[in-house]
Image (cartoon, rainbow over all chains, first blue to last red; front, side, top):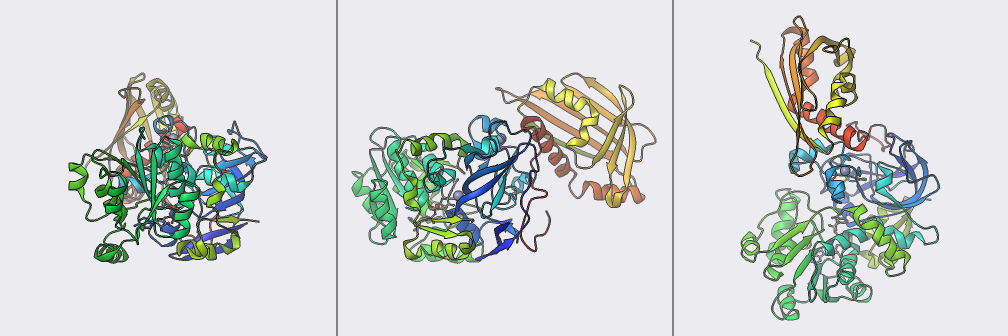
Length: 390
Length: 164
Ligand SMILES: NC(=O)c1ccc[n+]([C@@H]2O[C@H](COP(=O)([O-])OP(=O)(O)OC[C@H]3O[C@@H](n4cnc5c(N)ncnc54)[C@H](O)[C@@H]3O)[C@@H](O)[C@H]2O)c1
Ligand SMILES: [Zn+2]
Ligand SMILES: [Zn+2]
């Protein structure tokens, strides 16, 4: 089959590789009908995710049709159309039972690698480095789905891929970002990053009862989508002083909750931006924490920071004093896929939300390299690219 | 000079102690989740024969006997005199607090012999016997909780892919 393999920073190639087969009794094989590039793939593309190996098939946000199932798959069958969680959960460990699917104890064959870096192993993720299980990803014609009964969710056939695809990863991530804020009546939620994850975080904050939502970015088309799709107020951080503006918009209190939908490659300004960029380039600091620093200063005293943007390693110059003395709550994590996916599918089926609005481009899988370049540099007003394997 | 090497490792498994104990007590099950054991044959209630996989297709073998057996709590075993490698081990099952399942603790000790077998064992257990036992325990947990051991052996990848 055709698959897109990672070979190093900014080096992805379309190759012919063997088709996947059932390796374990709870596996299914899925024919990928649509897949898409996530901000997390950009961190891999840019070479910031350790334990990638040349030849690894990338991709973790996808859907398709089941073409084969192992003997222990109970709920899904050949021909089912499914949306697949980017995070793999076994469905039976204590964490899966607590709905903390990305903390699954049993889905990562390489959890020992993580124990060394993180202290404990976490769940496997499709196409997301060997520390996260080394699973082949979805930028391919076919993919093996471990623990298919939990990882994949059957969806109706009469709704187009475009509307359901973001329910695989971006939508539940944004939704969890809002859920972690524990939104109370009257709460104002600020969201850094108006990419797909940020868009869904803003929309979800309203679904979960926020009074007002403010989106922060610098790309006009993304800010516009935040206003139109998520009904958010927006701030362009290149035009205003974000801290000042947020205070003015919130009666001096600051947002009750702040969501990071940017992550480790945040764009920084001024001397602080140069400092982190230089340190990250020579790997003295693995992650650039501009957004985190800003959120800590912006957040209302006693408020909540919800971190969905991905961090991989270490950060410098965290204003811990501000966080501590303002009694902030930090919540974060890789998203808990199956906890949210059925509910979000329902929102799509009911017509409450049309997630396809974040898909700005559609390309064949063979043009993944061009898609990455466009998405990385936000060229041609690119927000998210749908890739078609056939 | 040979010196006893002792390794211990604990993992919490979300299953009742009785279920875990019964699985482990059927010693023939051990090769299903340990990387280095190739085969265990049980000859009587307390006697068994263990075969480990060595490098280059070689094996190291010994007879072992159960020296302590407390249903649902503990199993302890020891190689009988004359074994290639003097070794002993135990597994303990203790209920974890607040419905978190069972804390499973494995302790193994072995006395590395010199010569060829000693070299082979060093290779077998690698630089970190603790890592090995930890890995085996993680696989035991996967098998008990999830019913299978997660793997990516045999999946497709592109050119110039080096094996794990
Ligand atoms: N936790 C999870 O499970 C999970 C799942 C999916 C994605 N993610 C992460 O979410 C993040 C966003 O993903 P995406 O697909 O929306 O990516 P994206 O690249 O489309 O969006 C990131 C946005 O952040 C903006 N940005 C950069 N610097 C900023 C700054 N200083 N202030 C405000 N905005 C800034 C960019 O302009 C861009 O619009 C990534 O870090 C990704 O890895 C996490
Ligand atoms: Zn993602
Ligand atoms: Zn699990």
